[in-house]
Length: 228
Picture 1 (cartoon, one colour):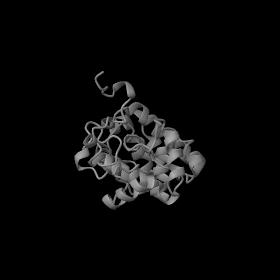
Picture 2 (tube, helix red, strand yellow; picture 1 turned 30 degrees about the horizontal axis):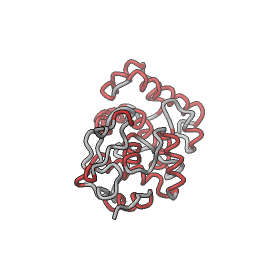
Picture 3 (tube, rainbow, N blue to C red; picture 1 turned 60 degrees about the horizontal axis):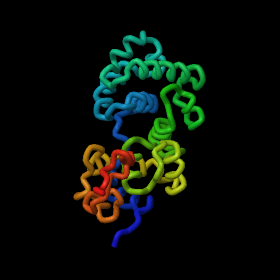
């Protein structure tokens, strides 16, 4: 019998599958995590971790980041992509941290969102991981794809999806929901070709290839249409 999947049902199964799911960016202090999340935009965590291994040895404080010529910082982060914008975001963010927060990463969503290059996803990750302050659900491309495929959201807008998940998930699980979704998105429900045959949701997922269903994460116009 096919069940209609719910967020609590999916979260429960994924927590058992990925009990150690957490942020996969390497960091030691809040500033490191903030910089890493800025670099992770349109870049893999694996690549960011390669870059930050040497970056964090060279830059230890906000002042370190603002003291170098921007061209030097760009060269240090070049392989993360869009390095012009990321270097500018890092320097402006670190300058604001120095000027407005005594050199410390702010600990509220409101203040985090005033930093250049920081959106709700980045803020929620930094606040949750570095300070254990759970104020949002970090919604990334993995989360959007899985939630759409599983029929848990009809939205594609990141903010609307986050608000929906905040309503459907206990606050203590907001960060966990994001992490286990990312883990499953990387291991099974991958972007290019979902591995439905090995997925725990194969029998119930409305996007299951095992059930002959189309991928709900694809725009309607690009879904395969049945012959007339």
